[in-house]
Image (cartoon, rainbow, N blue to C red; front, side):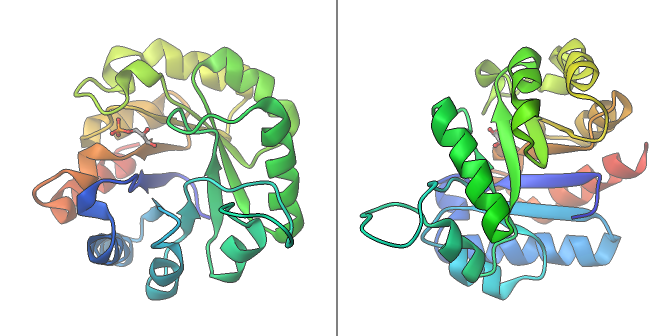
Length: 221
Ligand code: G3P
């Protein structure tokens, strides 16, 4: 996956599930093709297979379980996530925290099956502690800003700086409240290699326009 990247987490917003997930995924693909920007999406498990089949941009699971084939019920299999064409997975999102042991096993299973991992951390210090588990990227998102109108870029630039300082360059995504080009530009100028966002796109009346704006923010840096 090319960096810098904008990853949009569809969560379970109604505007981003079912047929809407497919439409929204195609809008992302269109913007990626038109602009050459690196866009990726994270989709709920029910829609994952058909979205991954329909679009030619990286599609992530929002979560998976560190299991193998066998006697498991209701789990999300890394092997199947890979098989349906997903590129990778988010892990330990603030809305789906997992314990340390599960996290370590999940990253290992993803490596075995060839899935890219974006491990989420609430703080720069936690992100630093996660480096040793060797996820592909670490996304720092202050939970209190998630879903709100105040972005990490505008209200917490020091958080971004600290995360980049503690984790090292080239591996940090930031998210929470990201919704305009300036948010993207600030994040990248402070050393992040991308942003993770949701409501700014999924709840927008015109996601195509919003995505074009976010991409313009990528290009300012
Ligand atoms: O996974 C991204 C997310 O937690 C940030 O959400 O709505 O603040 O962009 P939002």
